[in-house]
Amino acid sequence: MTVYFDHNASSPLLPEALEVMLPLFSGRHGNASSLHGSGRLLRSAIESARDQVARLVGVGPQQVIFTSGGTEANNLALKGTVDTCASPSLMSSPIEHASLLEPLRQLQRKGAQLSWLEVDASGRVALEGLAERLAEPQPEWLSLQRANNETGVLQPVAEVAEIARRQGVRLLHCDATQAAGKIPLDFNELGVDLMTLSAHKFGGPQGMGALVIRPGLRFEALLAGGPQEQQRRAGTENAALIAGFGKAAEMAQNQLPERQAFLLELRTHFEARLKEIDGVVIFGEAAERLPNTCFFAIPFYHGETLLMELDKAGFALASGSACHSEVTRPSHVLTAMGVDEDLALNAVRASFGMENSLQQVDRLIDALHNRINQLPPALRQHSG
Image 1 (cartoon, helix red, strand yellow):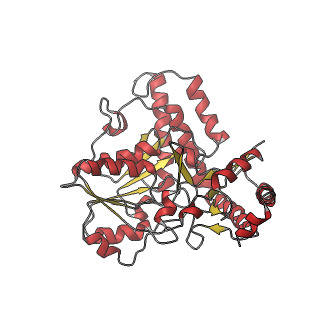
Image 2 (tube, one colour; image 1 turned 45 degrees about the vertical axis):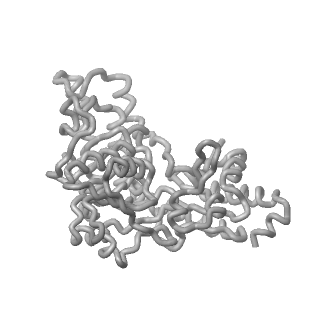
Image 3 (cartoon, helix red, strand yellow; image 1 turned 45 degrees about the horizontal axis):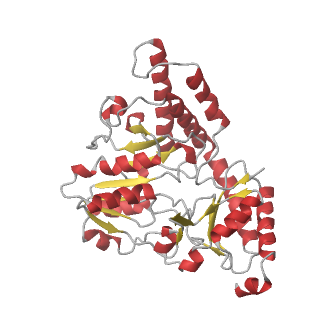
C-alpha cells in the first residue's frame, strides 16, 4: 500500500466530511433556491457550512462566497475587482500559484501594468525597501500568498498589507489555499480585502473553494445568470460539497493546535534524518514554514527520477519541476529564489498529513538511502 506524502497537492477526504456529504448526494433532491422542504433543507446545509468556513478565518458568513475551488476563487478575486480600478496596475510575487499568475499575465496582455515583488534566497518577500518598491509604479491591486505550496515558506502578509495601505494600494488579496487548516488564519488580522480558500487542501472535497471578501467591497460577478452567492457567483450550489467543506473547516478550527504540533514533529524528524544524506539541500529552511512541508534536493539525484523510484517503492511525493511538451523545466518558485537550475531540477517535495506516522517517515528515509546506495560510487562521490 502506497504511503501518501503529497498533502499539499490534495489531502484525503476526512471521513467526517464524507459522512455529512452522503445524505445530500443520495437522499435529497432539489435546488437550494427552491422554497419547498427539500430546497430549504439544502439551503440550511449550505448556510451552516458558510458559517463553519467563516469561523475558520474569523469573518462573518456573509463574507464567504463559495466557488468550484481555489483556481476559480483566485480568478474571481482578480477579475471581479480589477474593473473597479481606475487604470489597472497590478503587483504580485513571482512564486504565486499558476491559478493567479496566469490570469495576471492575461490581463497584462490586455494592457494592464504588472510588476513583481522580489523574493530572497529563502523565498520570502523582504520588508526592507518595500515602501519604495510600492511607490513606483504604485499598484492599485496587490496579491501575496500566505504560504507557498512548494517550499511551505510563509509570507509576511500582514506587514506587507500595512505598508501597502500607507502607500495607497487600494485592493489586497491573499491566496491562503495552503495555509488554511495548517496554521492560524485570520482575515482581519492579515489586513486584506480578499482571501482564497480551497477545501481539499485540509480534508474537504475536491472541486470546492471559497473567496472571502471585505464587507462593502465593489465586486463584479464573472458568472451571471442567477442570484446565488449574493449575486457574486451565479449557478446552483453543490450542497453536498459545500457541506463537506464546512465540516472540514470546523474540524480544522477545533484541532488546529494538535495538528500543528503533530505535523511539525513529523517534519522535524524527517529533516533531521534527511540530513544524513551528504549534500542534501532543504529549500527555505531558514524561513518560517508550514509545519508539514519539506522541499529538498539531493544534488546528484534527478528529482523526477527519484520521484518515480520512490513511487515504485510505495511512496507518493511531488516533483519540483514542470513538464511541458517533453521539456522539463525547473520550479518557477526555485528560479525566483535564485536556485541553480541543475539543483532545482532535483527538487522533491514531501508534505505530511495527520494519517502519516514517524514510522512511515523512517521507512521513506530508508527508501532514500536504498536508492542512493544503488547509484554508481563515482556518482555518489560527485555529490561531495
